[in-house]
Image 1 (cartoon, rainbow, N blue to C red):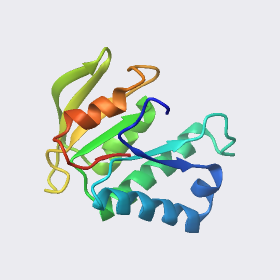
Image 2 (cartoon, one colour; image 1 turned 90 degrees about the vertical axis):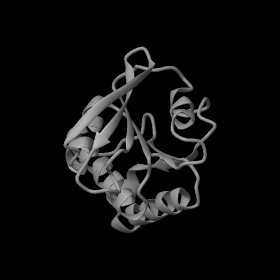
Image 3 (cartoon, rainbow, N blue to C red; image 1 turned 135 degrees about the vertical axis):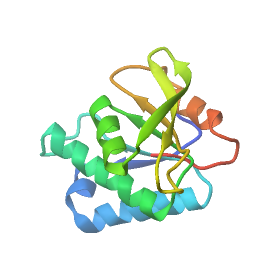
Image 4 (cartoon, one colour; image 1 turned 45 degrees about the horizontal axis):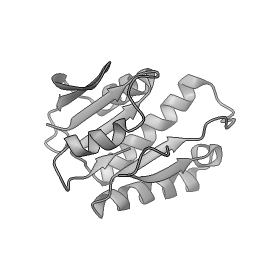
Amino acid sequence: MAAVTEFDPCALSPDVLHDPARFQQAVVRLADGLMQGRNMLAHTLPGANYLIDAPMLTTRLVELVAAVLARAPVTGLGVAGGDTSSAICQRLGFSALEFDADIDPGVSICTGHHAVPALDGMRLMLKGGQMGGANLFDRFAAACAEGTRSGL
């Protein structure tokens, strides 16, 4: 997290993912930040006990991303976690992903194709495991057009 300087962080503590009111507050905070032109980074807390298994945690994170994008479409979306990346692409309903460029060893940027204009052409950085350097998300933000919103 210390290497990420181009994003406003939004920590997703266990209570945020379990309490519907706090969940909605996080959605609004992230969407409002994006609508104000800021890059936003939603992240879980290392070592926190979320009291749910990994598939359910992924489901809650996917729900969060979908809710934020319903309020504030973005031109770029970077996702850490292989299972989470796959689940988000499925939930958002991309029909295809087209390779654009490698941004780091094992990490690529793709363009998502979608029937919905707000999602069509979105740049996606889907990173699994421990791939990518410490400043990967900042470099992804820079790879997206200057001044455009990216995040989550």
